[in-house]
Amino acid sequence: MFKEHESPFATFANNPISFIDPFGADTITFTKSSWSGPAPKQNLDRAPLPAPGGSSFGIDVKPAEGPHVFYYTQSHTSYGEDGSETTTTSTTRFYPVEDHKNGLTETPYFLGLLSYKDNDRLTLAKLAPTELLDYLIENSSGWDRKAYKGAKALQSTYGVFEYAKLASEFTISLGGFSYPFRSFRGGSVAVQAELKFTQQQVWKKFGEHYKEFGLTHSKEGFQQYLKMAQEIHKNPTLRHTFPQGGHYAGETWMINNGTILRLDPSGNFRSMYIITP
Amino acid sequence: MVNSFGKFNAIYSNIGSVNRFKSIVEEVTKEFKPQETVFSRFDLESMEMLSFDFERTIIENDSIIYKAILSQKDEEIIVEYSKGKVLVEHLFWYYPERYLKGINMIKKIIQDEKDGVLIIGFELSIDVNRVEESIEEVKSDKSIHPVIIIHIGKTNKSISEHISDKSIITEQKIRIINSYIKNL
Image 1 (spheres, chains in turn red, brown):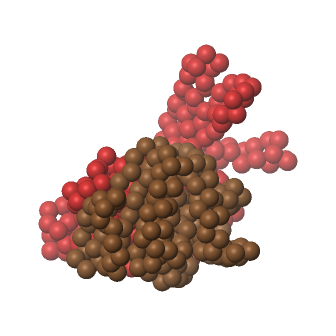
Image 2 (image 1 turned 45 degrees about the vertical axis):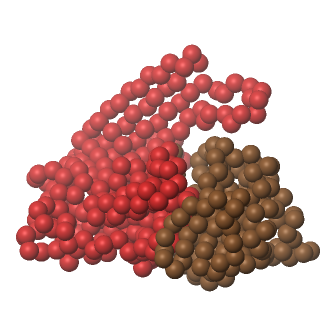
Image 3 (image 1 turned 45 degrees about the horizontal axis):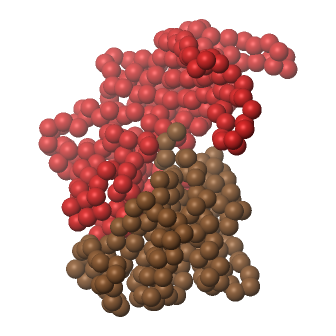
């Protein structure tokens, strides 16, 4: 936890997961949702056909007391011909540190015809994007740290599920990672620097996005748009700076309630828009 | 589905005049049939946003940017004018990926002009009062890639790509960009 006189940014500057209390424990839930439906009917009007099935994956990290707690939630929704839907959901706690054998994931062998049920550490290796494992390693000690390092070593042998890699890519966009910040208390938020912007850039993006926010294209609407950006900058629910060498290299994203504020690599206002239509 | 990439932009820039700005706005109004049109101007000296009367108050002034935003349900066309440059921007969300009305409009404008530059990407910023510098900035700023730049001459087109990496998301963006270019 922070001491009152310390700035959270002194410790966490440029850390992509900077709003997590590094000394706290988290509840980490992996969620895989899938759906299936009847075969699409003949496409008479050339309208886009709904996909007959698909899946999504997300990871949620919430503060908790005690050691890290891991859950894997799997849900499946079947859509019927008549539009009905049936959803089955199961949530299982798993123990990568103790390395129980819950068999939540499987490793195929013999040309993929047979499979082994995985131990929990391997399950974590397959479900967690590398950056999450790095975070766990960095913020643990003793046997826990060894276990997470072990999971990372397993990852290099067994790989990460494609959808978990995707969750890594979509960390921000799908809200896959959700980082409530419990470290920000008392006066520590006040040390946040002001949003850097040029009026012309804000005006440009206001013109492109004002309607999403239900604002009028007026001086007042412009001021509201700018104020909203400043509020998000001051108090984001989620903050992520993309590492160099990849997509969005050096950009910072700040997200609050489905609104994204993007800062260019120099920290200047680039844009703000709603990501969930 | 979420629109995390931001809006798709296809920005056409060319040398023009206040009259060309007005004629493009009128043409878009007629052909694109916007549901809503708003006008605003930006004073580069006072850094203030102001409104203006399209029919009456447009004059040549180096410190003023004029803008018309013409919106359809899923697409927008934004026309800007400053210091002898006209910028025509087509925007839409990549989800749902609907852009046919706007692309037809852009095609028509490009056909009339036959000389200029088209910049394609996501959530780009090209300033009409400093087009060349803005293009250089988006080319060199890898955080905003992929960016495709098409120089449209009187007889030919030259395409240059600026792509910093080939991650999954970039591939998705490139698919959308390619689909757009194919329809141009």
